[in-house]
Image (cartoon, rainbow, N blue to C red; front, top):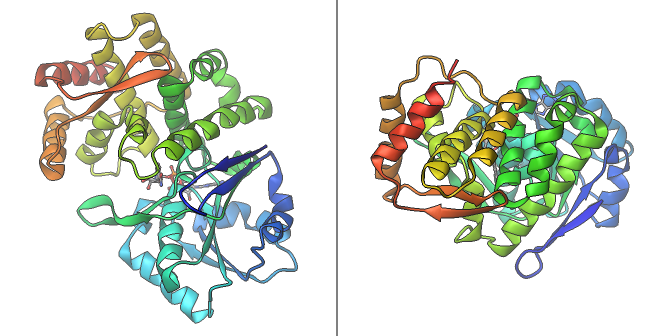
Length: 362
Ligand code: NAD
């Protein structure tokens, strides 16, 4: 399957999506005149599990790896700087192509690294997690973290290509897979009632990695992300709907020091909270909210919240509001497949929603 993500001026790019497409990588790159040399940025886990397949796919071409430690801490100035050193040492020039081979961390870090070296090298996203395949590899947001603020240092930098091969997910640890499902479920609620129904019926088949179901899931998520970013490339309007589940989700990540939860897990908890607020405002159908609960529970994305308390989460929400100087916005469903941004959520509503999710915290 091939999708095109239209961006302003000449920055549109293709998203190639197919089970096993990796073995055609070299031909696809060359057909887009991306002949290399290729500088592959990856992390230690992805390298360990998948580099042989990539070596095979690029056999005969000029390519080199730069391997970063796995995890969010690699989205740092230090790792960004090491990428610039690597590219300089290997004499990367304007013909060079940076391939981001990994999850959202590698995609964001390598993407930002590519965007700054010599004012921008060609970038190819080759995502290897469910989250990066369904979401972060599309949309051109690249960033590293400031010690105080996630994703503060970054830019919008379109890749030349996105190549998505779901077979790469076979080595993904189950927890990472479930966390990625958190974001995929989000697409059902914000934009696609059929996807929501499909997940309700088949989440176990997706979890057990059945090719047909996983392919069907991604083939629905990818065009939704493309449509949203096409309509709102620089996140001034429609793209905000992607933040469904993120208000409480961010607060959970912050309250747990970005260590306890994967991003998709925090979003899964946040979606439950947002669903609760929506039904108590009579905005959404309680049956649909129960379905959402059933899907997220069965997805395994509700990682236990431990000893976290209501006041910790509220404090994190207040901190976020103070830091950004913006009001707390909640993206809430009006019906499955249609969400709206609501700005007048009261403290009581937030507290009640947090109490609601904390019931399930173990
Ligand atoms: P990740 O990149 O940290 O990957 C999760 C873990 O899985 C890591 O330990 C990694 O080494 C391992 N891994 C990845 N692929 C593997 C594979 N095929 N086999 C074995 N192990 C594998 O996490 P993620 O959830 O993909 O991404 C999270 C990041 O994405 C966050 O930093 C978030 O800010 C960012 N993000 C960016 C956007 C965007 O639009 N740019 C959108 C959403 C999230």
